[in-house]
Length: 160
Image (cartoon, rainbow, N blue to C red; front, side, top):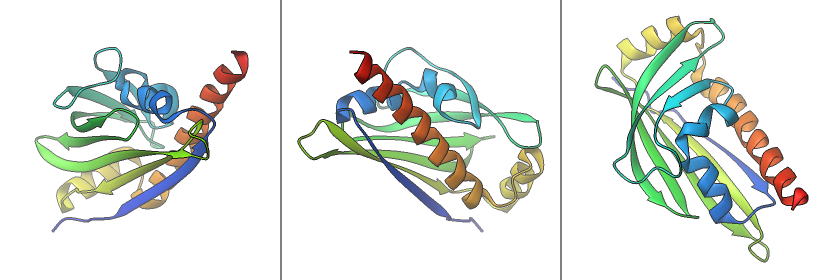
């Protein structure tokens, strides 16, 4: 039996969709935005479809774990999606959608996580991470991720 909990969070960022996309799709920088992802082993720049990378995370328990990820969708300025696996088993799909707002100089970015763990991975993952309510935890960390992204991009825009 798999859980299929889905969580989405959206934010408006005063930057063009392509600029926001380029930051999100540069998975080597994900640890800069995400409070749970501490680093990724990936190339530099936006990851293309088929790119694989290792993500290392740390939860409230203080313990860390690593997963294997594969980019499924990479459409500049529109959508970026990757699947996460652990021991070859599905963990989650992360999806980012970018929609121009107003005259196109701002972007609504929607981050969605779909939990795909089976019962074994749910229990093991919860025990290791210390996160028993993954939906609530993801919603909180996603809000923080998008806020960090927004602060950085808007500060860069103001600086010129």
